[in-house]
Amino acid sequence: MWSKTLGTILGLGIILFLLAGGYYLLVMPLTGSPPRPEFENEFPITGPPPKPKPTPVASPPVPQSTPTPSPTSTVAAPESNGTVIEPIGLSVRSGPSRAEVTLGGVALNETVTILEASSDGKFYRVKTSGGLEGWVIAAGVQANSPIPSPSPESPSPNINSNSQ
Image (cartoon, rainbow, N blue to C red; front, side):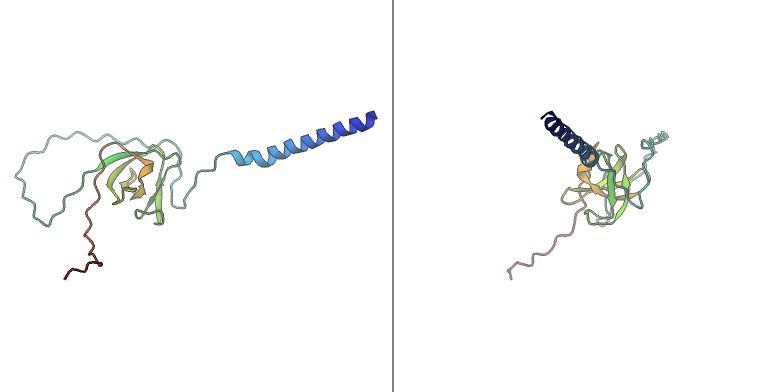
């Protein structure tokens, strides 16, 4: 009788040992965070982003007569600075869509110059400290000043209009 009880206890112990080992080997590796995605044309992040160089202070310019702008000249939109807040960084794309070609990337905490927002406000056109210019997802950038409004687009004609 003791041998049957001892065999049952030993069998249960072995089963529990195998289940615990299988859990550790199969399930535990899947619970970690995924690796940061890397793109073929993206520079690897090796440390903190470079600090911007201080610009020399110049004497104020001498006021001169300002020519009046012609009606056809365009006014440059004001620029704004922002900081990347997405933990894995952001992809810089050729247009304001996730389907556009990836030009490179920007790292967490990197400061970018926001040139404009897309018409729907979901993307910003930015310029990085390395000179890369493209579009990033707006939710991944914390603006440090007001965002320039999108450039005006020409109105599309109403093709459903029945006016004569």
